[in-house]
Structures are given as C-alpha cells and as structure tokens.
Image (tube, helix red, strand yellow):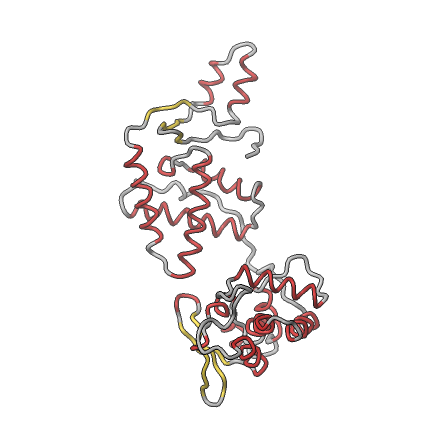
Length: 313
C-alpha cells in the first residue's frame, strides 16, 4: 500500500509474533548521522519491534469464534454482505500482520484510507463496509472479548443524503425492453421487465420462484421475499407477466430467472446480461447495472401519489 508522508506505522502479528509500535520520539533519538534517513523511511513501513506470542492456536480459535458470533446475528442476504465486509477487513489485517484484537483507532483510520485511496470505493461503500467492522468490535465488547471498541471514534466519510445512482430515461428503457424482447435469450425480457415495471429489487427478482406466481382478484401477482425477510405479493403488469411466462416456458418449478448454465441468476450474471442488452439497444452508459431499472421505475411513477412512490422506494 502506498503511504503518504507522516503515515502512522501499523501494528501487527506475523509468524506467531506480535508487533508493538515504537514511540516516534524514541526512534528519532536512536538515529545518528547517516541512519536518520533510514529511520525516516522506517516510519512509513512495517518496521516494528517483535514480541513473542504464547498462544497462537488459542488466538485463532478466539478470532473464529468472534467472527461466527457476529455473523450469527444476520440471515440471508444481510449475512452475505456482513461476511463479505468482515472478510475484507480480516484479509487487510492478515496482509499487514495485524492482530484484529490489538487494532486501535489509527489502524482503522488507515483501513478507511486504504478503501478510499487504493480500492477507490465510493463513500457509501466505505461507510457500509466500515459499519461491518464497527459491528464486529461492538459484538466483541458485548461478549467480553474486548474492553472497548477501537471503532468508536473513527471518522467515517460523509455520505450524500440523495442517491447518486441514475436511472434510465424513458427512451432508453423502451430501447432496453425492445432489445430484450427480441433477444434469443428467454431470460433477457424478464430481467428488464421485472425490476423496471413492478419495481422489484434485483435480488427479489433473482430469488423469485415459479411457485410464487399466482392470481389475486383477477391480477397476476408474484410472491417475493423482500428486505428483513418480509414476504409480499407484488402485482405484475401485463408486460412483466408475459416476460415471466416467457422465461418459465414449460417448466413447473425452479427459479424464474436463470443464467446461461441453467442455474439461478445472481446479481453478477444479471449485470453482465443487462450490459450486453444495453449494447444491443444502443444505450450508451458507462456502467449500467440492474438497480438502475428500479430507479427508472421510481422515476416513471413520480406522477403517482407520494405514498406509492415512497412505498416502492
């Protein structure tokens, strides 16, 4: 990782040895003559004094138990996102020989800087991933593994109140629908119509099964599991119903949306498929993604009563 001038050296664990930070003033006093330039460079690297650790195996079990205790608080997609965020942080610690239980506020500040400057994450992504780290340390405090959380006073990046993600314009959305309807793939039309017309989240559309289709009061509806595990019935417009029927074909069970291999489509496969459809439709956008279809739905229903738009968002 590239470091700027005045960076705080890191504290870590490597090969069963725990590193502790040497005071900066003591290191400067230890420099004499030609060694001063070398000592300045050491302040920007992982040049730390080793201290032996007595229980490396017990430490591994403790970390594994703490991670499992934190992830046990979540289910479904929320658990997957928490697992991804925690794995990112623990991998960062392992790459720098840092014991997560010995991390202090400066190390977490460096982790945020790494996400911003090296990984180039957006402020919302940095804030979300750091929330996972803060929740992990909060769980450790609750379970008695730590006396206090090092993430308590870490300054997080400011996240804009309004979502910067744009939607497709009406003409772009119509072009996508036309290209998807004329596509040879049975799933392309449903991929565009299900999030774009009834406003389903891509994870809701991808997790929908054929058994969830039904009729209520003469309208075709789809049973989906939304945020928090809440099961709702979503009315399908006629175009979305026809798109779902085309994707199902003669199948009687299984997922509505499938990838090229016949398995359930995930958000990554949906993103790749949508970008191919955008190229075929002549929609010139840098990085189109399925969530833009939901934004398009909200924009198209902006003339409806406010309560309808709020409930859809």
